[in-house]
Length: 83
Image (cartoon, rainbow, N blue to C red; front, side, top):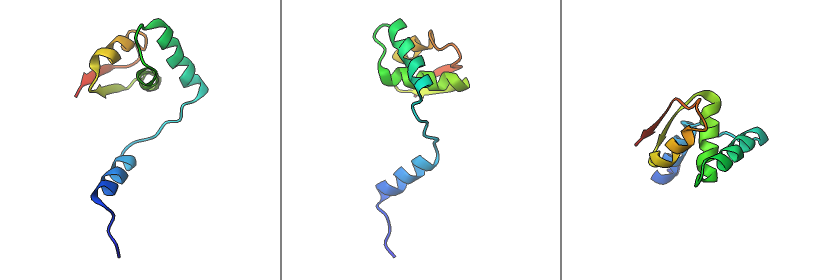
């Protein structure tokens, strides 16, 4: 029996702990609307915030400045927390 590399174990554990969400047309539309209303917002940040807003989530990020600006558009996001 062979053992997987530690990096593979870590990756598998991380993947098992999250739900991967597909980028639906509706989610892409909401993110696109945010890009037009929040100057300097990036696509990835807008998609993250649109996704979180759809569930009223809290967002943990190492980039709180940009995501907090997007929170003005996505008011359903409960909080943006810096990590």
